[in-house]
Length: 194
Image 1 (cartoon, rainbow, N blue to C red):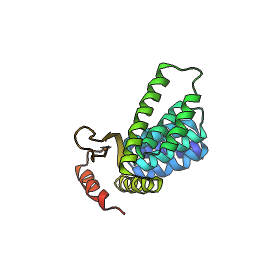
Image 2 (image 1 turned 30 degrees about the vertical axis):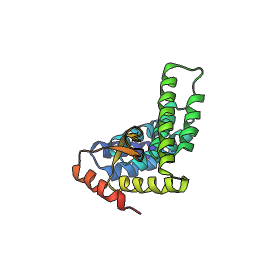
Image 3 (image 1 turned 135 degrees about the vertical axis):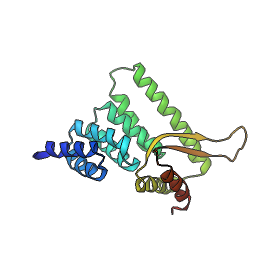
Image 4 (image 1 turned 90 degrees about the vertical axis):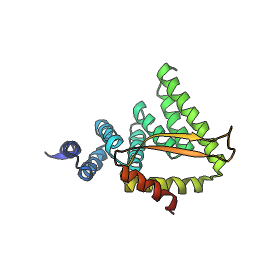
């Protein structure tokens, strides 16, 4: 196997055999060619087996290089919602909307979903009194723990307790793993991460 396609095939083989570090190594080389299929399969692989910070980085790079891909724009939007980065959410959402000739059901549903999350993110950030530097610090700590334990984010949600506890302000991050020890350690590690 020679050339960049051979490198991509090596990434796929290592991914299939569960050899994560080798799969990532070869995918990182393969995507330097900016081939749409390589990015797509790398993102799919990372969404199942990779760490969230790497998924965010690759999703953004894919969308930035393939600006006409609705799918890559949507991946970048989702990744930036997890880290509460409203500026990047808007950047990729505007790109996503521009890719439609006219408004359609798929676009409207995704935009509505994103806008609802943006409202929740804004409430969370305001109530937590997080400025941009504090947000970056908090999300950097979360990302570092996720990276260290190779964890993937499945879903985020917010709870503000407005009806019962005016001080409650929670960001829930659901992780994709079957490793209970890893989740327990992550839960204990995060609050002490500088």
